[in-house]
Image (tube, rainbow, N blue to C red; front, side, top):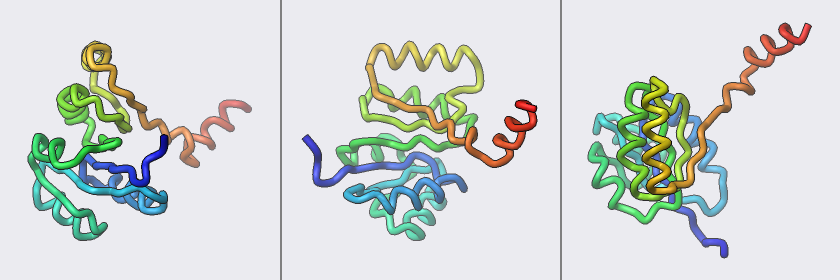
Length: 142
């Protein structure tokens, strides 16, 4: 059964979030309802810029505010493990920007946590489509 509206939240307010938000705006029936950032002022700026109804620097409040259908985890590489390990238990489907962790230990730990909660998730690997990667690939192909 399809829902009339899909609620999406964004965790992270860095430069890349603008690109994700612009794409989300074009998807029919998707409500970009909130944004979290460790820096409240950054969350507020993104909220105003993109007309997102709720912003916060409190991850617990962010999670409890809406019944999300999905979350985008687009924080800096040094924060991705700590954030992802905290939110897997909520079983909200995730799109996680790479890298998933900064070590094999972090990756294995997240796999272990996810096995416990069975949270649907995807890892963003869009860089393979960048023109620079395509050029290197063509050069390697000879």
